[in-house]
Image (cartoon, rainbow, N blue to C red):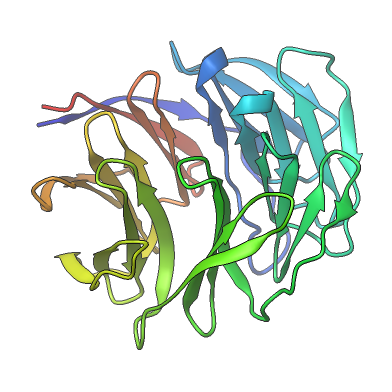
Length: 303
């Protein structure tokens, strides 16, 4: 067994009033041994010590923001997912005040290229801004609803995954933004994408449960694994070359060896998984179980 279950961290119960619960996601800032987990019902964000997996503090005044994202290079936490459409930013280790960010649409994701001060805001659509003044950058935006968007420092590019039709754009960052690649996956509906630094591969998970591997030079797409459930999220651990696969409406978490393309094991959590987070300092996987609610913590020993 390469993965060991360490503990369970109890979280405050959330009173989501809407029929469809909002996205609820945390984020790890490994440089400060911290996991930031929103508590929208209480209008704050919990800070969990990733060294001992205990709550060590909180950020107050965050309203009903339910999504946390990290910009490690700037030591920033971006908070989105508010019903009011407001985004907030919090500087880790600095003053505790929160800065409000205003956009023309309610974002559910913020991703920053800190070397070039380019910010990508995404939700149903997306837009690029000069950060921190939030001046929108000129870019001919393709139409489509965004499923996933993030900046990849390995490629110095933004990766944007669209829902319908299912396609993936790789946009080169810089003074002038440009489309590097546009990947079409045919009849496959792509739910998640991640870049594997070992071998420089693009890995995607599909609605039909497949894990596909391709390259940015448009190499043929290979099916390296197939599961019975729709893939919901992928995370990559470059230290041991493992891929963590989360499924929709499932309590199962699969660990895939990206060298052999074999499933090392499948962990069964205490209830359906709502999100997964990875701490690359301690080699830990955090599985959010919204119905309990709690975080289950797993250690990937790499063996």
